[in-house]
Image (cartoon, rainbow, N blue to C red; front, side):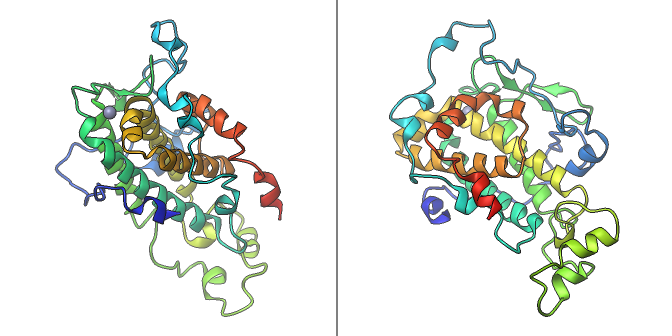
Amino acid sequence: MSQFFGSIGRGLRGKKPDKTKPSPLPSGSGSGGNGGASGNNGNGGGGFSSPSGSLMPGSPSGQRITQKPLFLCKPFVTSQLVKGSFSTIVVLPRYVDQGEWLALNLFEFFDMLNKFYGVVQEFCTPQACPSMSAGPGLDYSWLDANKKPLRLPATTYIEYVLQWISNRINDESIFPTKANPSATSAVNTPSGSASGSPAGPSGATGQTWIGKDGGFPPNFYVTCKAIYKQMFRVFAHIYHTHFAKIVHMSLEAHFNSFFAHFIHFARAFELLERRDIEPLRSLIDSFEEQGLFKDNERSREQ
Ligand SMILES: [Zn+2]
């Protein structure tokens, strides 16, 4: 998959963490884990900022809502690199720790999203995009350290998001790069560990969580969800604001396929809340009709 996208970027934007920047805190808390552990009020949004604007694209704020966005128009909406479903590359491979699978894919999506944003970045200026818009009537706002919503230009918002995600995925306490010495059964069993080992220790010690056997912390899944939510917003901004540039560069098939893969993965592992995908729901529905998400359940059962 990644070869498809490998040549289109303008270099990775993921820079080394820069401590001089104002601390980018989409959640208003020090870590995604924090927000998840304490502030998971209600529907799993963590402590994350809600979009300041209305979540209803059909809000009575303007007439433009009647106009179909470019990405929903033919032939672009049906432009795909892959005909058929992404199930085979989404479903958890047998005997693979779910935490490892989530982490690996998250890294890949982040890397690719960085590259795609790099392609349109020169058009995403404070003048062109004075707010982090995802369609008429919807602007995401950033929460500062005091949880006060800030209306930032999209380029600044996205820069903060990418930096914030980069800081998370480079954090060894959330995404360890070394094999976990305490996950003895999963890592150290010399042979025959493929069958049965994951279930045993978790059950025995009582508490369990996604990624535990892979050495991931209890807040791992919540952090993943927080990252997915922010990545989705970058997709939404590109689709709603810069899709014409994507088309100019004949990248719509790549971008659609990438987004379909991202959504399929998020659905398979319940990484995005329903309300969060609202800005691109029509597109997702269209992908659904095209069969891109098919056979998910069937593949999972096998
Ligand atoms: Zn923009």
